[in-house]
Image (cartoon, rainbow, N blue to C red; front, side, top):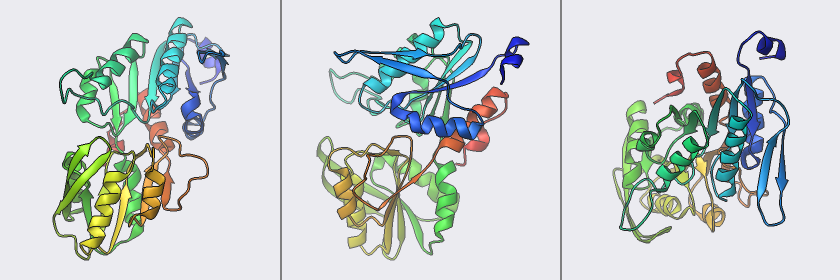
Length: 320
C-alpha cells in the first residue's frame, strides 16, 4: 500500500526481516510484491544489540520475519523488533516465524524442567505481538499456548507437488519414530499408499540405541517424513535400516533443517538418496553434501499474508 493510501486513512503493510532470516524475508516480500523495510542494528562490544526501524511504521501492520532457531539472539532480536514497532505506534504486529524454535520443550517429560515453548509464547505476547504465522510446529497443541491468533501452515503444500514430480512406482510413507506417525499417516491416507512406522530406543538425547520397522519395506520407494532434522542420527539410521530390509530407495522430506553437529556428514554417508528440506532455516554455506535439495516457503507465506490482509480464508494452504 502506498503513502497516499495511508494518508486516506487506510492501514499500510510493511515487511521487515531479522538478521537470522533476512534472505527468506526478502523472498517473502518479493513474492508478496513489495520490498523489505529498512532496518539497522547497533552491536555493542559486549554482545548486546539494538534494532532500529529507519522508516515510519505508525498506523501500519508490521510483519516481522524471523525464525527462532539457535542462537538465542534470533528470538531476542524478534522480541526487540516487536517492542520497537509497538513503541513506534504500529497498528498491528505480526510475527512470521517459519521455524518456531524451542518447540521441542512443549511439555514436562520429567521433573524440574521448563516448558520452553510456553515461555516463548508468553514472551511474544509480552512484546506486543498480535498474531503469529508459523509452519509445522513440533506439536500442534503449541497453538494453545497463545492467547492471540496463530496461523499454522503445513509443508505438505510444498512437498505435495514435489512428490508427484518424482513419479516413483512403489511409494510407501514412513515415520522415523512413533511421535511422527500422525504426519506420515496423513500422507499415506492422502495418497492411498502404505505406511511404515519405525520404533526407536534412545539411550540419551540425540543418540539412538536401537530401531525396528513396522510395515512392508521390501521393494518400496520409501519417503521418510519428520518435522525437523537435527543431528540426523534417527533419520539416517532409519534409512540405512530400510535399505538393509530391501527398500528400493529412501528419501527424506523434512521442512526444518536444523542440521547441527555431525548431521551433514551422516547424511552424506547414509543410504538416503535425497533429503528435501525447506528454507525456514538457512543452511550452512558450502554445504558438504549434494544430497540436500531446498524448496522455498516464500510463496506459501506470501499467499497467507495476502489472504489475512484481505480477510480471506487461508485454508487452501492446508493441503492435508
